[in-house]
Amino acid sequence: MADSAGAGSGPGGRPSRGSGSFTVHLAEELEVYFNEVAHGRPVGFVASPKWKPPTDVYETETELVVHMDIAGMSSEDFTVQFADGILTIGGERTTRHEGKPHYHSMEVQVGPFERRFRLPVPVDPESIRASYEHGFLAVRLTKLPARLSGPQSVRVQ
Image (tube, rainbow, N blue to C red):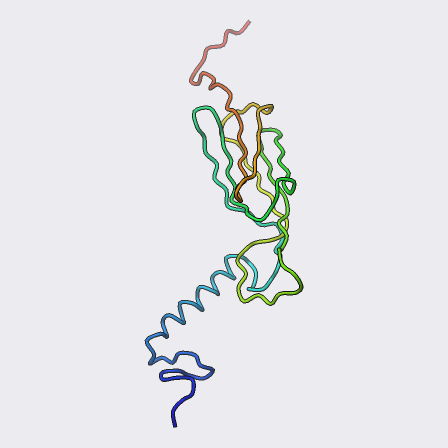
């Protein structure tokens, strides 16, 4: 009698060891497992405590730029603060669904987040500008002119 799940299938329609797709199935299962471990939550868990949106910090000749990848929000959802050389960006991304969905996969982080950056160069605190467009938050800070570095003599009086 032929197996209704198809040739090479094991119990529950899963690929058997003799099947060429066993390694594909194993790779998919491992990916799910490692994603759960990496995100610290099982698939289907809606919100984690504070999470960290991916962020680039770079400088140009005149500015320091903090560029955060955080789709699904509006400009009013963010807090941006600067004190003692530390830039703090926070907010909360909420789920966007109706009713109670049954997730098959959940990779988009939701819930409160906060990132703190000790800035690598001196900046003008009055120059901070933030904008949110196409799912990216950009915070721009004007760099202060570089001070002379190296040894300096100080006359003691």
